[in-house]
Image 1 (cartoon, rainbow, N blue to C red):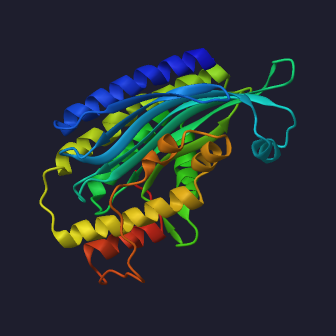
Image 2 (cartoon, rainbow, N blue to C red; image 1 turned 90 degrees about the vertical axis):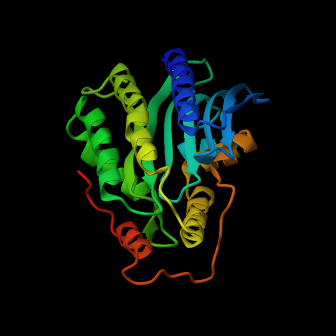
Length: 300
C-alpha cells in the first residue's frame, strides 16, 4: 500500500504542478530534492512571483524511521517505527479576488520491533480560503468535493465537511480559516471499508482537486482590485499564518519529526499584515466574509 500510494502522489504532483504552471503562464515550479537524515526524503516544488500565483508549493515526501519520543507520547506507543508519505499543497494567488487553497493527502504506517504493521491509516482533504466571497465559487468547490465523496459513501461529504469546519477553526480568533471543504483523518480498515477502499476514496478526492480550484482561478484572476483590497488580503493572510503556526497538526508533526523546515513553512505567504484591532466597515464586502467565517454555512 505504501509503495502504491507513494507512486500515486508522485504522479499527482506532476499533474497538478504542470497544470498550475500553465494557468500562471509566467512562473514555473522550482524543484528541490531533499533527504531526511533519519530516513526518507521528498520532492519540493515551489512557484513564486508569477502572473497568478504570488507563492505556492506542491510538495511530496516519504519519511521513515524511529518514531520520535514526542510522537510516541502523542500516539501512546513505545519503541515504534513509522512510515509516512503525502502530498501537501498551498497556493497564495496575487489577486485578492482569487482564493488561497490548501490540500493534503497522506498515508501512515506504524510498526513493532519486528517490523510488522501494527497500525495504518489515510488522511487528507482540501479547503478554500477566500478574501472576497463569491457564493458561486464556494458552491462550485463544495459540489466537486461532494461528487467525489458520493461515489464512495453518501455520508462522507456531510461528515468530512463538518470535520473540516471544526478543524480549520482559529479558536483564538473565534473564526474559521476559510470556507472549508473536506477533512478526514485516521481512516482505518473496518468491516465496511478496507484499506483498498480508503485508497480508492482518497485518490478520488486527490484527482478532483484541479476541477475544484482551477475554474475559480480562471474566472477571477484578471478581475481588477484596489490597494485597499490588497491590504485586506494581507491582513487575512495573517490569520492563515496564525492557524498554521498555532493549530495545524501537520506543521507540528513536521517540526517534531525533524522535517525539512523549508518545506514545512512553504505554506506561509510572502506578504502579510497584522493591523492592530482591525475591523472592516459594517455591511462591507470584507464584513460579509467575516460573518460567514464566524458561522460556517452549508454550500451544497
